[in-house]
Image 1 (cartoon, rainbow, N blue to C red):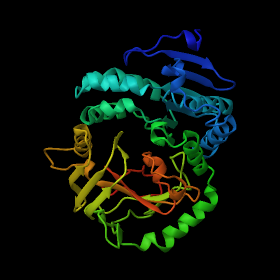
Image 2: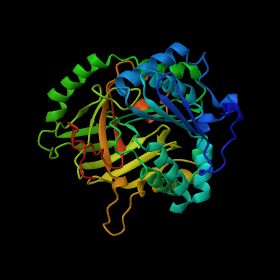
Image 3: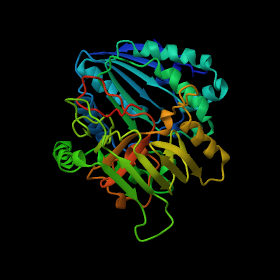
Length: 404
């Protein structure tokens, strides 16, 4: 078997390196870039930024609490080169538990090149789809370790949407648990010391979720379950921000189901701490203005305003010097457009959530990171998610699907 350093760099989606070996207890299978060597600049998580003991502590929480790994599990891990050090620690820990582990390390620069070349041609992504089908065979648990890439800033949102749709067809229907980590990038620090941003991020992962579960359940029982509407507004004393949004919560809930999901019980996000549900499908009206950069579907948008009527986004504006930003937003909003039914689920709101992680205080950073998965957990904040509502399996105790 070749050493990692000897394996060639992949160039096309159908030319994927496969490396199979045995870990201390379980089997380990490496796919593609997991066996490649990247420049040192592609590894920002150096020991001075994220000490080994912190990596191990984080990975132990993911393996034993969030994924609840057991010896018979087949674990699929997808990472970027930047997050590969964390992924490799989970590979080792999972194999020691006795799991079969499949690690796929994907380079976003390659995906950007693939999408730019393939465009809106579905067939261009079939080799990648077949690869995912192979990797997903028998998978029972999933872990995604993502790192924002500048390469995706020059990709068409329409083409990227088609790529995602094709790849999602190769999903794992037997997976009972999954986790998602969106790690802060060096660009996201905006000149702020990167190691301090990372430490802020990791601090959120040390939240006492047992205590938080009790507090969040109290919030749900005493306030949210009885609420009929949420009113989000800015500048009570006057100002320029246009945000004035009303979101209705009075929708029908399936018998025996709970309306709000208490994420402290099981949170698929590596940094957790929120309660969320789906709003009434036709019950969102008003405007939301975001005056700082945010990650909107994979691209950082500087200033974004969305206008809603009867549950759908009817208008938007982007304050940017780059025409591609506005084109990207439009592509995301019209991603699910159906000319026959005149329904566009991607223009709806699938989730309203309330951040409660007590260790993530907005005042502790001089800026808002573009990392939505982090910011939405800030204590005392509210967030919405554009697109389809979450459709939980029948066995789930939660009803967070509003039919969109």
